[in-house]
Image (cartoon, rainbow, N blue to C red; front, side):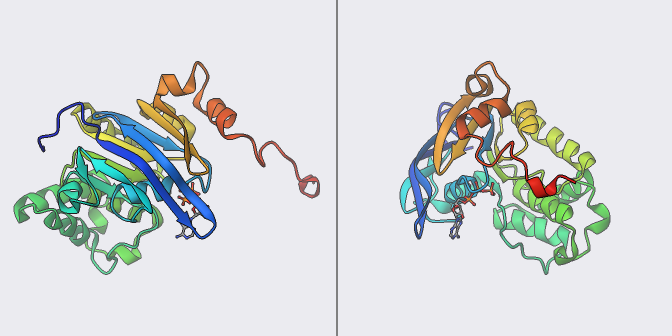
Amino acid sequence: MNSASQTTPALRLRGLSKTFGQTKAVETLDLDVPRGSFYGFVGPNGAGKTTTLSMATGLMRPDAGTAEVVGVDVWEQPWEAKRSMGVLADGVTLFNKLTGAQLVAYAGLLRGMDRDTVESRTADLLRVLGLQDAQGKLVQDYSAGMTKKIALASAMVHAPELLVLDEPFEAVDPVSARTIRGLLESYVSSGGTVILSSHVMDLVQRMCSHVGIIAEGRLLASGTLDEVRAGSDLETRFVELVGLEGGDQELAWLQL
Ligand SMILES: Nc1ncnc2c1ncn2[C@@H]1O[C@H](COP(=O)(O)OP(=O)(O)OP(=O)(O)O)[C@@H](O)[C@H]1O
């Protein structure tokens, strides 16, 4: 653990902005994710979640603004910042000519871990995530759910202070999803911080202590789950804030 105080947010974003051509994907976004929180980042398709998380984790350079992980600037001190976080990115190609076991071990070695610890943690992760039988198989031959799980294992192997997970449950079967939920919940109980993006409101409501709602690149609400849902359920609050564009409509030609 670095010397940042316990009150230093696990993730602190200030004025983060990104424009692609005419599209303002993220606009001067400020966000604090408290340490020890389980933070759900939600928003409609194209809201700017992946762009925000990519800039926050050093995968995409912002046009403006700063990102700090436990007080360390991600763009000024990338090496130190990256040691403190584990990232499951959306749509990033893995080194898929490696086997599952090699990929996780590689992630650990890259973070400066010794080989024995890497090997024993890799074996633990593969066992817990049900990938033991596929450990010798090339990642390019993994199914979508297996790929998600091996990427998650690679993000966790160095036991970072912060886990940033873009859609960690997408394509994952219910048994594995339950295992992953359990792993993340016990990680947070032990003092870790998770920020995850998801479209599944029930899951966010069930797991997360804090929530942020983003739409059109702007943060519309952020705080504890109870603050954000304001006496309502999260889905209702989400629709109130984001609007029902395209929702609750019918197509006459699809009525058989
Ligand atoms: N590399 C890119 N080039 C051009 N436009 C991009 C690029 N990446 C994202 N965008 C645009 O930026 C906006 C935000 O996209 P982003 O992927 O961050 O949204 P998201 O909230 O993660 O969406 P989803 O829930 O559908 O995954 C969208 O309008 C998208 O089309």
